[in-house]
Amino acid sequence: MNSLDKIIMTVDKKEIDGQKSKISDVFSKKELRNIIFLSLEETGVFFSDTDKELDQDVDLNECLFDSIQSIRFIVALEQNLSFELSDEILLKENLKTINTLVEVLTSMNANRISDS
Image (tube, rainbow, N blue to C red; front, side):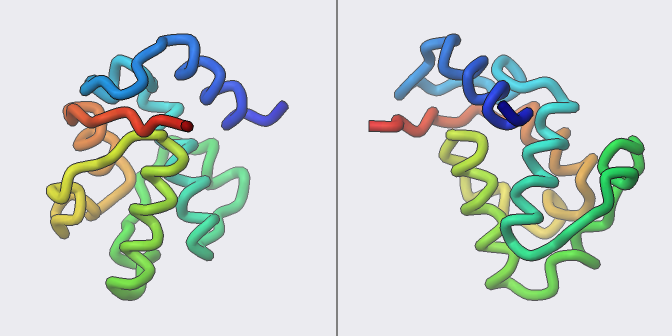
């Protein structure tokens, strides 16, 4: 079982389907960072394991080359979080760095995406 499977199982146990919830009530900042890296990889942006483990910030403007790749990243992020994110997440200042994105996500209320 990989780390994303463990995170999803934890989220499922919280029984918040269909409810508006604070993302930080479901995921820790470390879990959010891991999900962001996973979503970037699904978009074609790869990092070494060392880069992921270090608590360094990553400039997303250097990773996401165009608006299409940014949208694909947000879609992958929503799917991996199982939350529908508001349009404010698309603002350039919210996608500046991974740490900025983690802070925005932890303060955000979002609707849980039902698996059914």
